[in-house]
Amino acid sequence: MGAWAFYITTLLVYFAVDVLSAFSLNLQFGYAGVVNFGFIVFQAAGAYAAAVVVLGPSGGVASFQQYVFGARLPFPLDLLVAAAAGALLSFVVGLFALRRMRRDYQAAVLLIVSLIALQVVSADVPLFNGSNGLTGVTWPFGEFFGATATGQPWLYLIYSLVICAVVCGGVWWLSRSPWGRSLRAMRDHEDAASAMGLNITSLRLQVFVLGGAVAGLSGGLLVEYIGAWSPGAWGYAETFVIFTAIFVGGVGNYRGVMIGTLLVPIIFLEIPRFLPAIGYPGLTDSLEWVVVGLAWMLCLLFRPRGILPERRLRAPRAEGVALDPAPAEGGA
Amino acid sequence: MAGQLAVDASSSPETPAVGSPPVLVAKGVGVGYGGVRAVDDVSISISKGEVVGIIGPNGAGKSSLLGALGGQVKRTQGVITLGDRDISSLMPHDRARLGLVRTFQTTSEFARMTVYENLVTAAEGDRGASLRSVVLHPRQTAQRELELRARAWSIMERFEMTHTADLYGRELSGGQRRLVEIMRCLMRHPRVLLLDEPMVGVAPHLTGKLIDDLRGIAQEGLGILIVEHALEVVRKLCDRVVVMAFGKVIAAGEFEEVVRDPVVQAAYLS
Image (cartoon, rainbow over all chains, first blue to last red; front, top):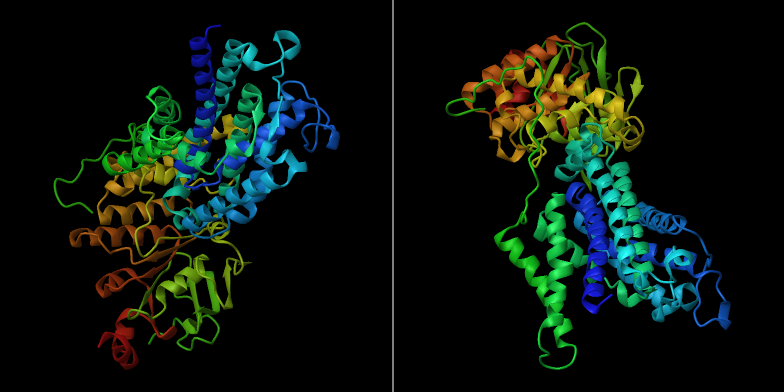
């Protein structure tokens, strides 16, 4: 495979992973109104979980890397463990971060969780090898197709796209269900939704855990492709890239979210690679974040509902009901 | 004073006007905000088919009382029963599931949902719309959707709002938003309806129709407790009136008698 083909394939795998992340965050934020500023932590949890169940038993201090719960699990257990790790961590965090308090406070708590998690994992070397992170993660079909996913990128691309399609289809279906409608009611007016019989605390935790599972799955899928995972991959700013993708594409519209994902984490962040080097080394990389921030601000200023706003769902008509005419003037 | 409602707030709730046993009873309810007692030892009851109005000056504690009954505001004292069930410690959604629903002082429509969605969502605050039901029992969920659809259209027809079915909550006029709130409550087959200033924003020529609608709803067996500033509305709509001031009930009875009460005139009407 040529360099360009490999590059394109890699971008498409990243796209599948990012779409999974964006669908998960859109379910939490776009549908349920949960401002999850700690989203990347749950993706990281899935990535670490998948890594340690693929790497095999830890060699302890004699090994070149240390980690907990080492095992060697076959497909699809590795990804299931990744999803379970994201869900479990979401449940624990959700129990204290999603208490009945204002949404901006919840967002602040989740951002702080993200910062603390990064510091703890970086400092606690026996946990996941500290700031050096884990490496040597192989993909689950090694005995059939070669040791690493990057050795067979086309196969891994198909594998990623199938998982992405199935999971995103499930998220979309749930969003359109009566349960998804309850989430939107909670998003629009918590007190009114509660006064109509919706258990807000439970709904919020459900969507947080479900989104955490999808985030964990996306992390597992990513780490098995790139083969390594370290704190450098999951800084809190990564969460804002996904948020920007959702805002640019259209909050609450999954087609828009896919467009936003293509534009922001893929195209916007890849363009600087092709620009001539300017200024001091590393300046171009730093400008990536400026581009993301500008995209978000411009979107909020000129198209606050994104490229494809949330779709209006027409009411299914009941038999025998004729629409009464709208009052000519005035109205209730 | 007709004596239908105990003026002495600390006394036990009175025998309701309609004669049927009270469906909602509050005994000695108190609400405090820091050192302020917004509601102080208030007792009140509502019977099936009865419309009770609460009036009083700003800051009298009317909305706080409604909040305490609905569970949105934490009570500091007192007992609230719905039917024969003590609901004092229940969360708002549990009270709603037992049949106690409410509207709010500021409109609370689901702004980014259509009127139709506002209605069907209101009926989903039970296990029917749970994640488990949706995933494990899709047929029952689909069947339930059909039932809710028919009910939602029937209620929209009743309130002549079918032309707004596809409009977002945020696209409605103030009065239409009030109607959506009331229609949403009716989707839940409530036993008691708490209405907090439902006439605010409603065009004057339509208040008469809304009064007729609310009377019609009450005659079907609902108890309605309404906080309202417009005395003409209270006069036409309510079977009994409770007057609050400084967190206490200062008078109660039929409208015409209450407004002649010197205590009421001193505290409120003058």
